[in-house]
Image (tube, rainbow, N blue to C red):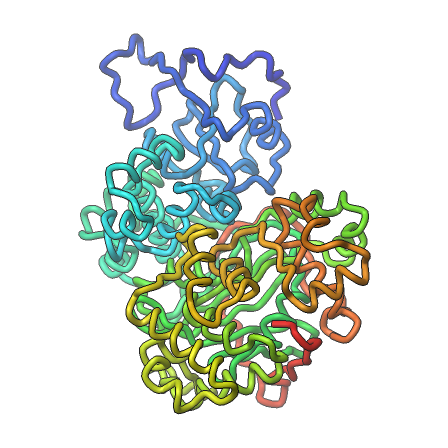
Length: 576
């Protein structure tokens, strides 16, 4: 590492003499050196960012990127290359901003293979909401006009705000997203390049080739042959890809195991308990271009995700939704440090470092399942949900290709709206509320997606008959990923707070802006007494903070003599 002091750098607001990065115009330069004013975004403090780069702190990977003027490349903060001098770098919030300025991706640290920024989940501003939708592929499917419509703004205003705050407009941000998807397909599959081009969202092979050369400084063919110590041969079958998903450690896999197992819907989801204490989550999921089967298994320092029977145009969407389900973009160390300073929560945080807030694979499904589970136990809710799925769910075409399981897709809103009164049982008021919500979703009178603001989603949900504050808060927390929603109306959370002597909600204001995570800690604390899973040791302990996304060998199918399905344990009455 260089010993250059931070005092030697020039002010972020003053002109800096930098070497000419590729793609920049030299019309006004002299002797190959350009004088330009480079402004660090207001949300990025130069000294703090440079300290993270100097220490190669992997916690900041994905939260900002380092643009190096002398080499014309951009890197992740933990890049193992020699640390550049302060005067030779500036920092940007997105890879798209670096690409827009003419920098190419570092081949050594693969800056696109990092966890997403937790800012996009924690922020309620327009930029954060737009980024959540862009990573879900909205621009590829609906264009910038469709993105702007979902956010409730004009395309011109959206472009102006994103350019000002993130350094790139929606088209440039989507382009960077397509380039990252293309790199994964190039290095992790044996697909022909022409197929990869359209699967990644490019409109032509020429556009694909030009973008890959600009972003990575290599042709697609050369990028595929690039040597990598962690790379494995691309042996995936057609429509199948296996990836390593990076996250910021620590990660409490016990909590995710319990949550997914206790809420699993028969036919839609299966949680396998493996021989050595590890676990594997599988489910059928509906994606924009058709259904797919996803498999998620925690491993050391990463999550192994396999997506099968996939229309490759949906790869980025599938990966994004898996990441949201497991909350893999969270900055767990910062959250734990903040909550750990509270004397009440400190023991809870120490007992479960890296606790996550599970997200939603399908927002509409999350709302329907949550409404069915109102004011009843998880066991009773699962009975009603299993019956609904068994009667109205449909078999995906991908489940007929020799899979041992009888997979089902959760019924869509229109089907529930039409047949829900016939299938659902229980109080008439609850049935009417569930069918009414499904009708509103089917008719698009209410839209649930990660780009909604928490306040708007909560207000829209509360306007539905039969939806109370607990349901609105819980659904908003899981769909938007808002880290600051206190589930003070949840019975289990309330009992845990009472046991610990915490006054909810007034006394919990000190936990802001991490009250969603505080709710999960209270929830887990109360259930850990009765739930065996929550008392076991964490099965996946990171040994390194370097976690790039790379292809992995497919796991061999386990013998049928090994346990295939866990027996979900029942949480206390009132838990959802």
